[in-house]
Image (cartoon, rainbow, N blue to C red; front, side, top):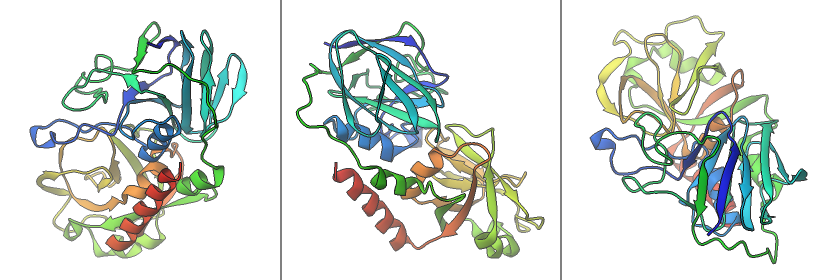
Length: 318
């Protein structure tokens, strides 16, 4: 069995899968990867199913020592990836030899990179998922981020040499992240608490720009509204009876700063929700750095479904 030793850990590297589904009614967070497109692609590139655990690395990656050969893939942010000092490409399957050292450095673009290994990381399952719940302190490795000295096991990975390199062409993944836009258009479904928002704010939405704040994290992406001085909430105010939250729900508390709830969101919330980011655009939002400008573009449910199907087709092409 392959053993991978963590020689140096990044600032926030955790084991995640697609999340802990089915327990929100008991107050358990879903967690899971922030960028489902990148994590699914990484798993497909090494022959895993989509829900295999991956290592999600934030802004700066890890240094890992391999005891046996293995097949890996790194996707997501533009991280500097080296095997024994030699620069390696992203978004394709790579062979790592026994005794080799993998170094994932800083990220020139994006926030989160994903490391998948053929066979999948061997992680204890808690409530149906391998995902790390940093708030609850369980899942992954003792509910915490990776640290120097950790040893990671792999499920049935013998590291056979690649017969044909699997990769996803750059034009296919770049379109998902809208990287050629200075202001990134994020598509949303409006509602369900529109009566709590001032008509002037809702009518101006097509022209407003929002800046990603530095206090954003895995629980939520907080934004500052630029060049709008009018009221945001209606006379009903920002508070609602606590209700469900979903990945992409946009709440606006009394301070007026929209917060997009992300992977580590709480299971319920008591602030008015003016929209939800469509599933297809959550990956690009997960890769937005502080100071990045975005705009919200209302779309129909049919458009949201079509966008998700198109993105799934990109993953299925691997």
